[in-house]
Image 1 (tube, rainbow, N blue to C red):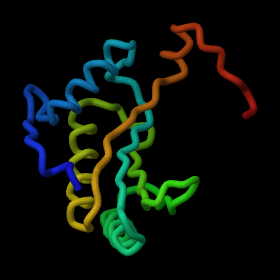
Image 2 (image 1 turned 45 degrees about the vertical axis):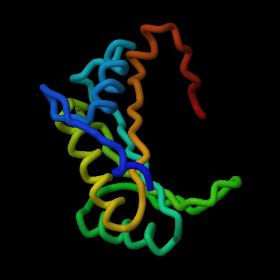
Image 3 (image 1 turned 180 degrees about the vertical axis):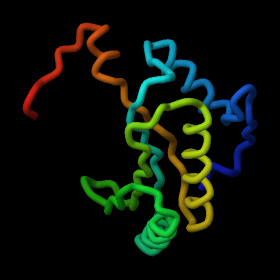
Length: 135
């Protein structure tokens, strides 16, 4: 598991890891409103079911919302998606979600693969994206 073997550093002013801070800045540069409510997911992966289920159990005890994803479509790893739904995605919310994901993954032999946040309908409309209704 290579996540913790490479040198990582926190950056200011938010205390995010440097790669997460860069992703955050790119997200904002593409039109995201830092004060808007949106959905955020942190992805965890595990080589085996035992580690994934133990991590899922601990997340449940912490009342952290998410889902356990079994291997499928040729992917041999188990996954967990850790959610933050309708959260104002300020850097503190992002940092806390990443830190929980990394701590849980490391404790159960997994890796925190990274995060994704979803643009709002209003942000997409500004780009001329036509949303499909009823799907």
